[in-house]
Image 1: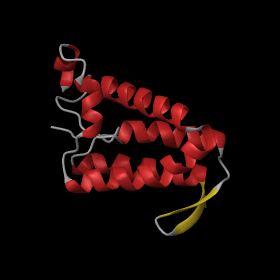
Image 2: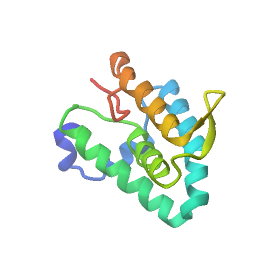
Image 3: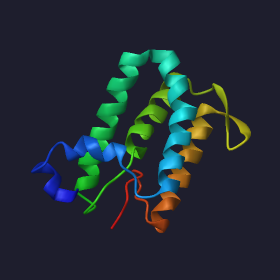
Length: 129
């Protein structure tokens, strides 16, 4: 994607649905199932979809300034997670088989993705090259 994304703006959205590996896809699906279902129940389907696409688009635009290619829904999932941390910070959830408040789960997800940068996954969850 990279800076060329602005010549093909649809790639800023379509890249959300592509993943660099099965592991990347499965991790995103796990996070989407864990956090997305909760948020959709809190704010409703329409607002959830708007938040998902705006967060994904924003992450794609930001990533295009740093990486030559960007794939994945992690930026959109960060938007979902951020909304949950703001709306339900003390809500208990099970993440990684451990009960924890939402704000801790958000921190854990951020740390896991941050250290994923060393394994070819960018901070916004995008594939680096």
